[in-house]
Image (cartoon, rainbow, N blue to C red):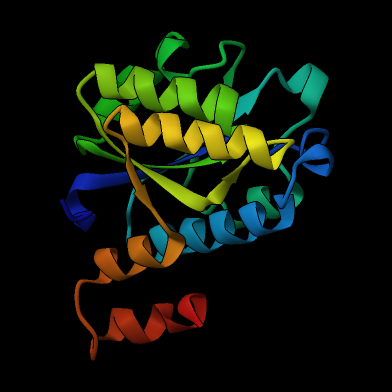
Length: 180
């Protein structure tokens, strides 16, 4: 199953100021999430950014807020975005059945969001190199559990190339710096 640009949306989960310093490989997660956020903005793919308990964890990282473009920010207290009132309705309103999912923490909010949205009928693509936890072990087992549960495991470059679908286009040339 390939990711289709016209059928997908991007959801970044909880890349927040007070959480990220404790995240194993957090810089890579942020860097790749930013690449996807920028690619989605340039290709007019709807993007959403969730923020878990902002009063305790702070807002999204400044870099995420600056790169957000037209992304919609969603505050939540449930671990799963799918459990937060109104979020599924917002995602459904985009009329795109594929969710490209990144963020933290892989074994908590990302995992619960993935399975929650999958149960609601969305096809989930977890971007492994843009997803992290406080420990490598938690991230590893979260990804394995999601894979076993039917979540598609992909990388940042897989998403970007599948969104583009072909080379030798203006869009390809525009996104090439995000790929290199």
